[in-house]
Image 1 (cartoon, rainbow over the protein chains, first blue to last red):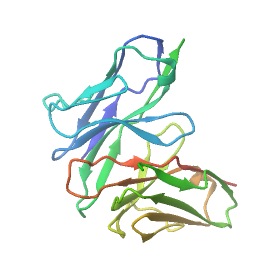
Image 2 (spheres, each protein chain N blue to C red):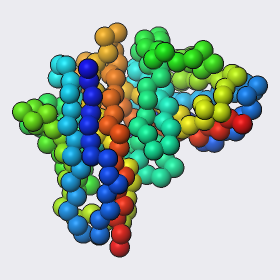
Image 3 (cartoon, each protein chain N blue to C red):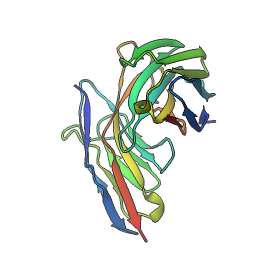
Length: 116
Length: 115
């Protein structure tokens, strides 16, 4: 079946530290890959995406590269800020068999806390 | 406009009440979704509407009843809920077309408490 495995954390870093959150996936077909971020008390926001192998998604200093050979989509940021504190979800998307929609499969989420 | 708007933001209801959650998007998306998220867990898919037709029901109990009145609106009708149904209910939409833009846009959610 389709699944996403990400490091569960929690992860605690000091401001300006380097961040890596590992994510690997299992999928039939060719999924699109996403990182979503959820700030406390809010919904999910799309952080970045990649739709095919070797694509690199980037946004707000975060990056992730779609690695088909290792089935991975690790999230990285060179220098984290206190405002990056949130829960990060890795997800894959595949078309539904009924067509005309996508089905998201989420990892369990990684809580990041950045201290000043 | 890249927003998905959900109302209400918070809802407290008794086990005998009937209430509805509402979701609206004006991005021209043709697929809309309901997800349920318990504390410290990832969202779980409940329903998918594709071109205003229910295409996926992930074995959700009948006390949850979705409705898609038109391509911009999605409702979730609630009746005779249990305390364990308390959760954050998220609405999402996506283009629903064969394109590279497969990402889903999420609303802020409705925090539901069943007492």
